[in-house]
Amino acid sequence: MGKQNKGTGNLRAFTAAGVFMFALFMPVLLCGCKGNQEDGALLFDLDYETQTQEVYTQTQQEGQTVPDSKEPSPIYVYVCGAVDSPDVYQAEEGSRLFELIEMAGGFTPEADVTCLNLARSVADGEQIRVLTKEEAAKKMTSVSENAVTWTAEENGLVNINTASLSELTGITGIGESRAQAIIDYREKNGGFRSVEEIKKVDGIKDGLFSKIKDYITI
Image (cartoon, rainbow, N blue to C red; front, side, top):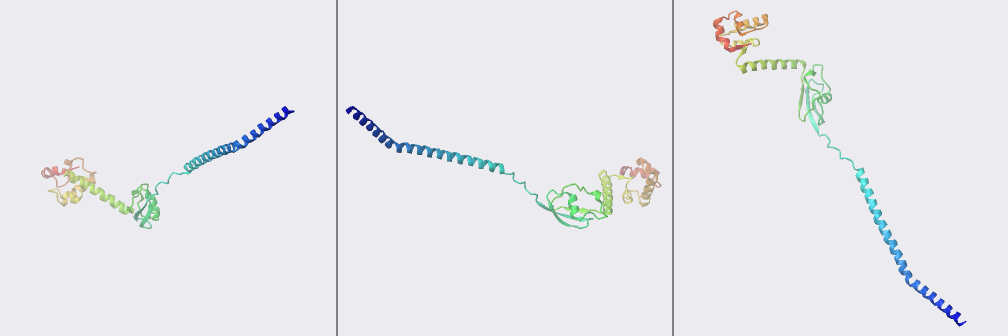
């Protein structure tokens, strides 16, 4: 009986000690668990923020668009001549000539449309004058005459196949009547085939030819 009481007392003592130890270490265990939970929560929060920032950055990059190129600058062009509404017109840089003609109301019936390159680009401050057919014809005649005169002056010789009456009379020894005879001869015979053929013109013999041969050509 005494032994049984003694054993029961020891069991109770061990149980009390165990309860005491459990009560003693419980706060530590709880703090440790709480600390682990807080550490885990902190790591989760940091990881979540990092992922969120990466997704936001990626979204920004994907949403970025290439900046628009510089818009064309306005230019001002004066269109005049044979168009319906001559005026200064505003257009975009790089505009074509046909676009400016359209702004000016198009060509008039008298316009010479063949003398313009309608596909070319126009420049700021440019003047575009559309010639009439009559003006274009006069201009071409003037250019041709100037080219003949320039060639004669360049060579220092007078072309007896193309020279005008005034140019022929500029040759020493050739008066107006002989100059007209030269013109009549070339028109009748289709021009001179050699310089020496001028001797067939009335009033021009060997003596005069020897004086003018160094000043004429064909």
